[in-house]
Image (cartoon, rainbow, N blue to C red; front, side, top):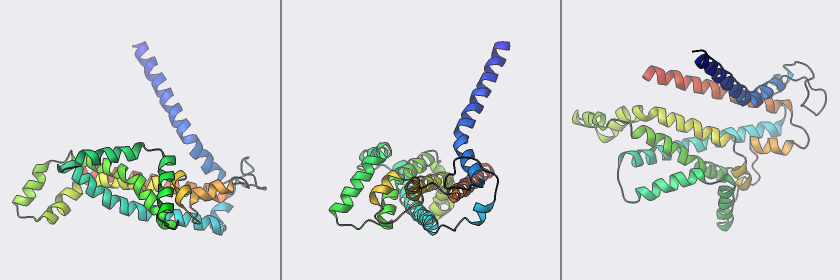
Length: 261
């Protein structure tokens, strides 16, 4: 018994060490959003202040970059969820010619390094004389996040009992009515999870975006460009707010999933 208790304690200590290690960068970011810095450097603690929260949007370039990231992430997520849900339904529910090749492409896109995807997209846009701007960033983000939505939705679809849809059709529901009232609510957790994943992948992407952005600057690109002169505390504040919103969305999704179950 003593050996088992000692093993449990070691497991608890190991678990908490992993949690602390994973959370430490976020904790530092939140802490230095309250740092009352007196110089360009924001790497040493110089006192507590709420000043940077009141001056959150005082740096116009940073505000524009954050706005670009949010708009691009929102639009690319909407497009990705619509296309990914349809493709996930097709792969999980139906059998068709080319299904194997489609599955292979989906997983190949997940395993492709961002550097390779960014370089290939840049070559494609240059060869086609496509001007690089926010639209090419959206196209790129849809391409690299689509596979994650497809896999998430497909995993939910294969666990859905087909008899529910058959019962709805036997009761006179149309194909659209069956999808809207039976299929979509049943796969909604997978759709929401895929959407959250696509949004998170888009808003913090740097590698692929740096190949296809043109003159459009996003939040990650602005931060990397500001490293040489010193990252202002507003970056930590914006990162803190984005993190808090993500946590609230995740908690809301978990509560909704518990109520549905």
